[in-house]
Image (cartoon, rainbow, N blue to C red; front, side, top):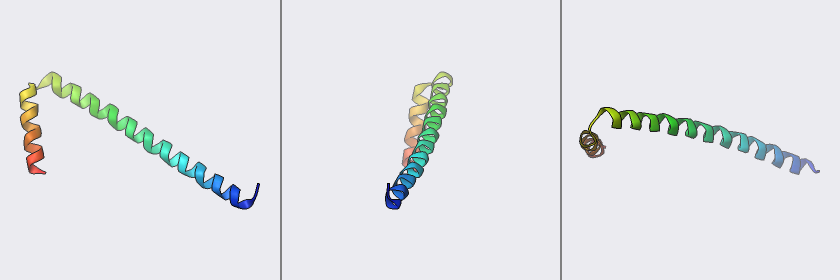
Length: 60
């Protein structure tokens, strides 16, 4: 294996590790926000949530 190939493999492994870490962060965030959404739906009438979302979108 040439040094060029070794460097490419090293770079690919580094990128793979970075992407796995990013995927884990996204997975954890989706779990968190799904739990928040479920809690919101249990505690608040859907109409109130819908009105809040409309307000948030209009403010953005």
